[in-house]
Length: 256
Image (cartoon, rainbow, N blue to C red; front, top):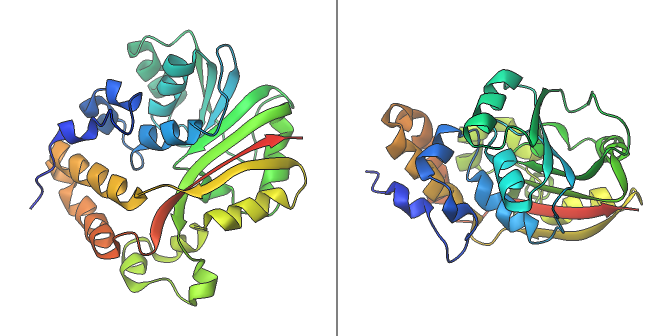
């Protein structure tokens, strides 16, 4: 039985910036677990300042782009493959940030931007779908200015699937082979640092990430009861795992 109250998503002790946002609004834009909590935590290892031009890569329905604009007074390009630009633009207009966010439909391997045109690139709940190839970071940093910042939050494992020898059954049952892309923070650190194109400034597993993920999923099921059958397997997976294998990796770097 689900007992989570939507007000449980307001947690000023841990996420003071995110707690200013209406939980129902966030859940209506759901395309992945607790994106603002992840972004707020990730931003602690970034230096985001007013006026920066930031690419929000895999921006989904737009919550993270609204956050970047409101909290850091940034100029944001919200790029996503699956969300129509006009739908994202409507979210930005309603949030009062339409003049600071440009919505673009783009595939992550064919970005329609000039090289060295961003001060920062952030990606939340998306990098695991397109960023694990050895060649991807060298491609992506082309769009950063020298000294530009890169930050991403992505589902992670506490140990590499390769080292485990198999995807743990309770995870495989829910996400299948996709879990092989859920790398450890140390894997990401090496993957980025070895290119010598960036200096990794932080690579860590989020504290109690599984608890945040579980709280978000329960709240989503309460907010949209029709989604409970789809969310229950995730709830069961996280309840069984309790952080043994499942986490989120938060990784930041700056371009040389």
